[in-house]
Length: 353
Image (tube, rainbow, N blue to C red; front, top):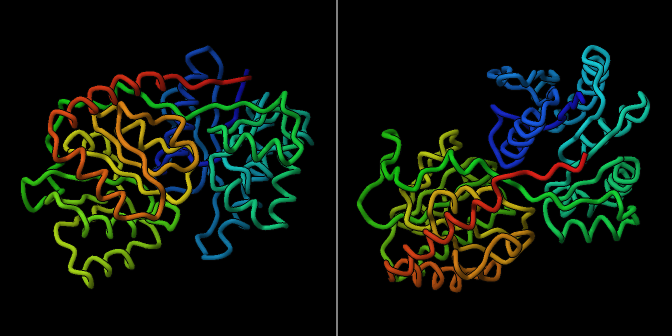
């Protein structure tokens, strides 16, 4: 079988890229061929046997999606013909899913889509986009979602349950070594205090402003390391300055989270909404206890053995949960060991086709 993956893929950074990379490796392991069509990036290159191409699109705010849609349509059509693709697997429903499903159907190819979270939780709230999403889901041969909440949303749209699969994110646990406790030299922490680590995009859904509020309320004296970038970074940095929140370090986006995570004391994810966050799996594989909010698929991967869950947008409860772990070193280490072991359950990605 020749599979074309459409959507984010390394060198792009993020949970979807991590997911599609692991998917490509699993498909190759079983003896099939993988081709990738991803968004423009200057460092795109083939990864081993995986052929990676881009759909060029000018980076014009507000129009990038439209340009990518047109460019990707024609590029994907060319790849289907050149490589004799059998199945197109699009990640994120709009625009990749729309492109992959309709072009694949037109050219007589099997199609699969994976909904990763915000496509069903945010885009689908728009009536026009919801109609497009429903048409994509109905036309696809395989519909994959990363948690049961998303499955429920798909089924409520009238999609045939026999073609809907829950395929949680997975990680390569061997990339993460709990014994590697030295930070990369270019990240300068200001002290040897315990480190609370956040990794993710700096967007509203991630709830970082509530994490900053929790930092002010914590009894434990900690450093907060925020790894990631996004449109809210200037606003968050201004809040740190205006509120005089001490010991907060912003690193920007990083490609070496496996070198950063093991040095932290605890991982925190204060999201308002989520799909199935791969960063939690990465943190657990690094031997970190996790404090997260009870939204989306987080409850499907978390349990009391590996950390704590709190309600979203409640800084005081978030602060108390972090304090509870950080003020009891034996508890922190126990949860870290349990987290590492628990992460091994997510080392293989399920592929229904």
